[in-house]
Length: 101
Image 1 (cartoon, rainbow, N blue to C red):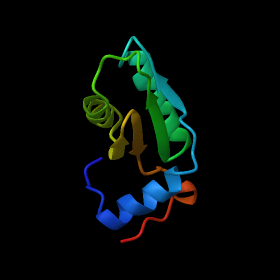
Image 2: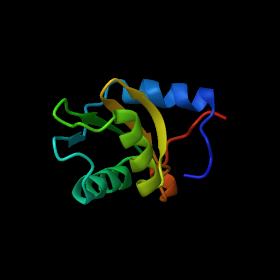
Image 3: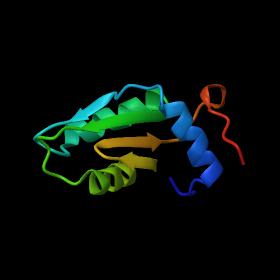
Image 4: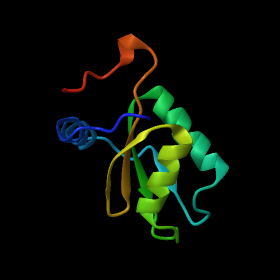
């Protein structure tokens, strides 16, 4: 995702993600191509996803978030502990979240 999120947009997305459950788990194998595919598919289904990095994963959650962001062309909303929140704007206009400016 080329554009950076403003602080207002980030706050809006954080509040929207607050009630969500993690849709992808990253386990002991770390960031595999299958995990990247799962994240990409989840972002295609919904714009905002939460990912859980399990304790058995030896990779740093912040680095994992950045790599996933690059591979899926999404924005890292925030990494909190072992939770990653990613956002990618939907291609279909009717499914798009309306972000504050």
